[in-house]
Amino acid sequence: MGSLMLTLFLAALDQTVVATAMPTIVGELHGLESLSWVVTAFALTSGIATPLFGKLSDMYGRRTLYLAAIVLFLIGSALCGVAQSMGQLIAFRAFQGIGAGGLMVLTLTIVADVSTPRERARFQGLFGAVFGIASIAGPLVGGFLTQHISWRWIFYINLPLGALALAVAFTVLKLPKRTSPHHIDWLGAALIAGVLTCLTLFASWAGSTYAWTSPVIIGLGAGAVLLGLLFVLVERTAAEPILPLRLFRSRSFTIPVVTIVLLATALVGMATFLPMFLQLVRGAGAADSGLLLLPLMGGMIVASTLGGQIVTRLGRYKWIIVGGAVCSGIAGILFSTMDVTTGPVVSGAYMVLCGLGLGVMGQNLMLAVQTTAPVADRGAATSAVTFARNVGGAVGVSVLGGVFAAGLAPGQESLTPAAIQALPEATRHATQLAFADAITGVFAWTGPIMLVAAALLAFLPDVRLGSEAADVRPGRREPDAQPSHHA
Image 1 (cartoon, rainbow, N blue to C red):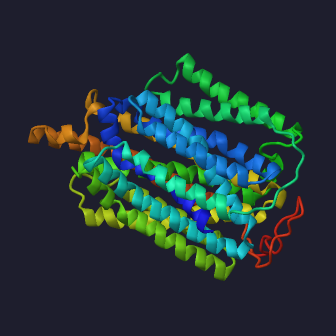
Image 2: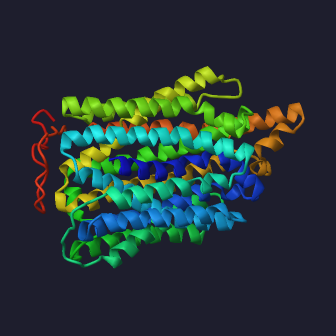
């Protein structure tokens, strides 16, 4: 568990360490118009790699793939640190995302392999706390390094942590080898990569780079639909489908997967645009904006840790997840009311509420899927949830980035925090008002998104978690993990 937590911390740190450095990075590399792609490229390749890593681990075992994912992630981190342009940084972030996709899905799948259902609730809570700690450390470390050394060190810092994680995993992680028919569904992997790429480009370019009615946007939308239909047809006949369609017969799988897309969209939007609000509207420095995010991350840590303990004791998770979605939805609506006069106490209270809601959702949605999926499909099921999270992150940040850009006047998108502070007082105030309106316009979408998620989760089966070890025969579900008669 220690080695798994260390590698999860590594991957989670890199997701958050970039947030407070983004205004400085895009200013130095002259690419505010490409801001969303630094996040999107990472999420896109993570999403493409996730189902492949998950299915291959079901077939060949997890350990070797897990170690390979760490190595890929470290190479990508080193390349990001030496990037000389926005194009290079985006490309290297894409490479880094391949390793991160493997780390995320394999870490969570290995946890499911070595624990019983009720133990898993507690461990998932602890892993959620690790993710929260990384989320706190990321903005703080990212802001400090950006302000006092260089933004490049937000990537270089991964190297010593990664070396330690690799050494620990190589030494102590011992897992049984798996045997399964070795038919890799390369066509399915290519099709799902095509779907995600079309969706991401569609969301990123529509209404900004290209008009909604342009041939490029229409072609991308049609391409996503066509490739999606082909993917379904291929998976129905594949010997070893990369994503077994039989999993979608269960509401305990389908509802969490759909909800994770909505959750990731809202979470990435908040994590990306809250630091921008604090820096561009409130005038906080990069390091200070990291500190001001502590209420959000603290709420996530508390809710994740206590939520895991509560689920372990009660043996149920449904209404805890629903409550979390409602809390984060209300918080998103409250974020949309902020302006240049909003003080740190008020914004901090909104962040705590948001963190409490988000903290109980992520790991328990994963628990719902892992508990009810057949053991032989556990890697594929886990990767589907992680893939859905990446889809929400990639497409969501693109859509929300478009909402943000549409709210700004021409020329404002190239302003950095330092440039805004150097403006004459009247001009600076007007510019801050413009950025406040644009950013809160983004938040106006996140609240309703999470309330829709809460409505969907009301239809999630009320599952009772068992305390016995899992039956590891292929095709079998976990014992004592069935829908309640009161569901």
